[in-house]
Image (cartoon, rainbow, N blue to C red; front, side):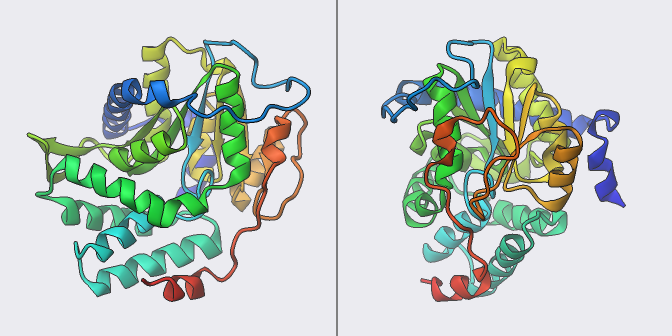
Length: 314
């Protein structure tokens, strides 16, 4: 029943907390992007023989917004971050098993469970309370190398690089903590990240959020706020996601893409004639106009996530 609300995003007004979360995330993203901008073109990827129809080269009023979990990266960033914190003895074994179950469900079902995501975020907040932001950023760099780097979808990364090659900014938009999202964005050579903003005082986490998690309507508010601050034309921007929960964000832009879509998003995308791409099976895009580079390195997703999680416990 609640899920039906996501199918009519334009009629669903954001709450005050969604707006607050979105504006806070946009502000944090703009600050972090100043540090990341000089690294955005550090690597020069190969380009296709013919200039793709989209993105439009040199359109500085356009940008691209990418969901993270199961769109850019296999699985949930919060889970991988939790594994890294467990390894560093931030919490106990029973918490790891709870995270593992949530991750296995997410990987096998291919869709976010709001209760699982909320429980994971509440656990993460309690775990980091009292720790310094700089400490978590440093640990996040290590965790990216340990658990996340090998889980980036090559096809989605090629899409992001096509936007960068066209001279456009590329942002991650995720419910993961903005600090972790910023680390991932920097390591991928992207412009920056919009993420959930955890409250900190004098550089120390308080265990509270600013607004609410950057999820659903809050993501749309964050993109809207960032676009206004950056002077972007949303009708010329692109957004990419796997989840029907992100229909509000996808509906904001002129070029929405369903990447590895769940069943509800796939149906919605086909109804509205949105472009689709599924890197889990290697299927071709349902619509033309996707950069040729996006087809490079498409890989199949794992179907035995629960088993793999136990084998990779260490």
